[in-house]
Amino acid sequence: MSHYKSNLRDIEFNLFEVFDRGEILGSGPFAEVDGDSAREILREVDRLSRDELAEPFADSDRHPPVFDPSTHTAPLPASFTKSYRAWMEAEFWRLQIPAELGGTPAPSSLNWAIGEMVLGANPALWMYAVGTTFSRLILRNGNDRDARVARVMVDRQWTATMVLTEPDAGSDVGAGRAKATLNEDGSWHLTGVKRFITSAEHDLSENILHLVLARPEGVAGAGGPGTKGLSLFLVPKFHFDHETGELTGERNGAYVTNVEHKMGLKASNTCEVTFGDPQVGGGEPARGWLLGEVHDGIAQMFDVIEYARMMVGTKAMATLSSGYLHALDYAKERVQGADMTRTADRTAARVTITHHPDVRRSLMTQKAYAEALRALVLYTATWQDRVAIAEHAGDTESEAVTLAGAINDLLLPIVKGFGSERSWVLLGTESLQTFGGSGYLQEYPIEQYVRDAKIDTLYEGTTAIQGQDLFFRKIVKDQGRALGHLTAEIEAFVDDESGDSRLRGERRLLGTALEDLSAIVQQMTDDLASSAGAARHVYKVGLNATRLLMGAGDVICAWLLLRQAEVALARLGGPVGDRDRAFYEGKVAAACFFATTNLPRLTSERVIAESIDLSLMDLDEASF
Image: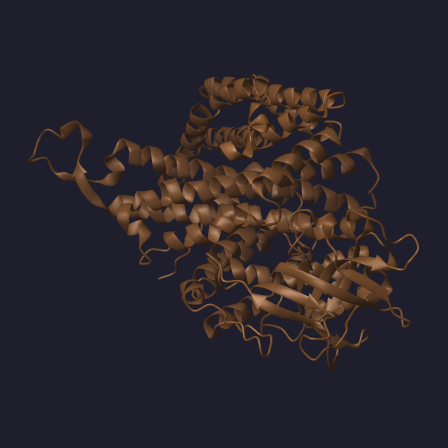
């Protein structure tokens, strides 16, 4: 039986009943994918995910790839390779590929709905396969030569990596020391060591294309300290003909020199990669090509980073959703104890644990967050849809499309940081807890879910970094434009008198929570302003960054759930079948529970934020 439990009903509810994706399917850039086709695709990906893709989940965890330092290889288990082939042969990955590269473009919202199911079934598989998707980023940022390379990547189904981190420069990307020296033929020679590189070695494709950030040397206007001095290079594992894609048989000097032994997500090779070291491999130089022939590496890489952050948030949510559905099934079957009203009666019948209040609290907490995070991912993707539609129409400079991009940027750290943090915590404290001691055993997939999900809070920027990114780059640098627009939408929802009266109390809670969140932003803004005269006041901003991130996530998720509840109540006002009635009633219950349980906490978070001082920063390290 598959470990993966999908929630196709809720995915379709979001896409077609809440966010009206049927209005954009079959037209504009998505002319080849209409509403009926989208539903068929979702059903088939759902089946494929629960069957072939999920099959090697446990096997590849128990028998992960083994690194051979003599050959610098780390082949995948046969069971995993079989599933990978099934996914690539299904060709749904082409829905993320531009038409000029051989793809059939679909809305981002549909692609991330597909992504949820694949990432929930086998996250490492999606991570290896995402290399073909990087082709669109090469096309967007490259020149004619790079466009040909992008087409080769798709035609030959090459994988790709994003290569940023160095041993002495983790999240501080600008401290990277990998170097690039220009060769006479226009290629570049790269030297240095990178670490924590996902998918840098495997046997799933004939070639791997590394997207490497390095610091050019000896080129006027290309160097300098920090991130601005970094350029982005395309560095293949094997050299190839740039016109045909045929491999030349020559090995490039980019070698994996270690594969990390990890807590979880073991099927995904996380590698150290050494470039241009004469003592490694055959001693070949590592040759690469400057993307687009422009020294704009960090901006180009951000296209990849933003996709990766969306992927991480989606992976986290998908794992929580499957974990919750496992916990729900177990709770419905596990008989233990008498009903709480009859505990004094030793002869009382034993009941399933769904009868116990705290188990119900736990299950509804899991349900509400899993469905809220799904809504958050797909809502964010609808802004990506707007940008794609505008670009297709040639409208790339208008205020509307600029705003859509800014709102997407604002939401990404929330999707990644808030989504991963809430999912990891709930998987361990609620989903696994529902099973009691059994959840700690490998007989159930929850223990692997917990191990696999922890990485989501760490890579592509830890939670604290996401909070700082949200405040400094997505609010302050944007001058509050995107946040102001989103705030106005939530305020309009709160004040909408045509809304269902049964949600009046929850709307008031949302309004109060939004005021509290705005006050936290204002306090942080004031502290930042005061740091101009007293630099240490910026520490107060740092002490509140994660608080802001989590508060923003709760407010936006509550709003999205209440929007869903409005739709559900409208449906319940007409004729519905028993299964749909239960589904819609569950949507209303989750929204109300989330609002009444989580939103009042924003008031206390505001009090804490407004009273933050520097005592923690003044404490001597010896006292920790």
